[in-house]
Amino acid sequence: MTRPDGGLPGAGQGRLLGLMLLLCAANAAFWLPQLAQVLAGLAGSDPQPAFANRDLANYWLAGKLALAGDVTPLFRQETHQAALEAAFGLQGMEIRNWSYPPPFLFVAAPLGLMPYPAAYAVFLLASGGWFLWTVRSLVRNREGDGAGSGFGLVVVLLLPFLILQVIAGQNGFFFGAAFLQALLWRGSRPMAAGLMIALLTLKPQLGLLVPVLLLAERRFAVIAWAAIFAALLAGLSLLVFGPGIWRAFFTDTLPYQRFVASHWEGLFLTMIPTWFAALRALGIGADLALALHLALTLPLGLAALAALWRAPDDWTRARLVLAATFVLTPYAFNYDLGALLAMIAASLAAGRRTDGWTAAGGALVMALPLWTPLAGRPDVLLVMPPLVMSGLLGVLVLDVFRPGWSLAPGRKVMS
Image 1: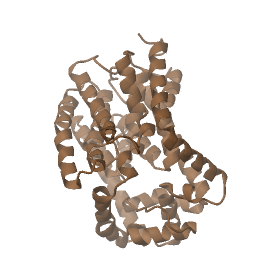
Image 2 (image 1 turned 120 degrees about the vertical axis):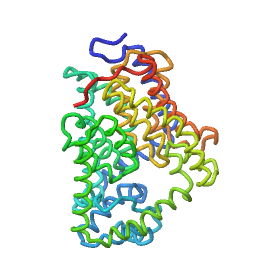
Image 3 (image 1 turned 30 degrees about the horizontal axis):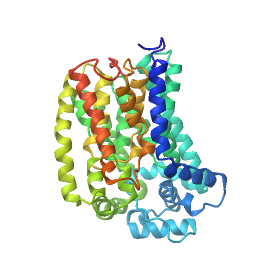
Image 4 (image 1 turned 180 degrees about the vertical axis):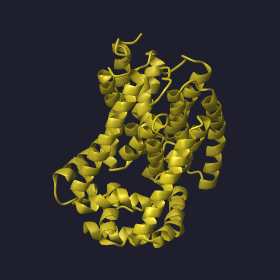
């Protein structure tokens, strides 16, 4: 049974939250010191190496270079690294590279107006505020206007993801909000939904299945607006920054990004919850790992595609597309999971099943941002993240063919 407000009953909620806490605590030796370093860095004015070595350093550097009028150093790893170390006045920083298409510079440019700690805080607060506002809209869509307590539970379920964004200084809030907003608006505001989808082209692996969803739902106006806005973003970046950076993006940035995916090793692989990354972390070469990834995921992807056409409502289709995206793509990080985790949290908060299996599965999914990376663990555990993601998609597919079997039922219209 559920509470009158639609949330999990006390026992089910306690099981879910308790298991989440245990999973997060199991890896606290990794993430707690990282969080402390970021908080200390935000409180200071002179970034120390531990705080400077965050992904947001890339965006801050991009903003400074954009405002200075020359962004060409960004797009080649060697010049990017030199510019990064010069900007911080530090030597021997962690190796970083720029991976975004030129329109992302419009997002990064305002950060160059501020010192690094202020840029870090402003970016997280602004993008995090947008993400939580969108999550509240999602919960209202799921539960109706009287969804205040449901939103509170969803935020608690999202705490591992929220903490990870603070630690990583990543753009998961930004792209998670854009993805959720596109899903919420696709039925009622095609122009606005198209703009959100155009923003996803700045991290294209996240929008891998969006065209399939829109075609399945015959949202041709959304497709048209997305194409228009994507072209406008590309054209505007061409006018503002010049054609040279687009050449550099295709000749330097993309080849180096392929090199990163196929040759880089270490901690970053254990932050990618895909079969490709898990197999690479186990020592399998990139080509074979990709072939095995496709062999493991394509059958489930085809089942998800069949479920997409059979799904009874917008909500169910959105969940399927989000889960399938992170199973099928070989390269997406734990900090990219925001939109999927928000939808799963909203489903759990409104769900009717509260047995141990649901609590365990929900905890594994919702706590994944903090129980990964599995650094220093037995190798056999490296397959746990993609196994959890594949299991989630399998449950959602089964829920279509056996209604009421798993998570909360859908809602007919997302608007």
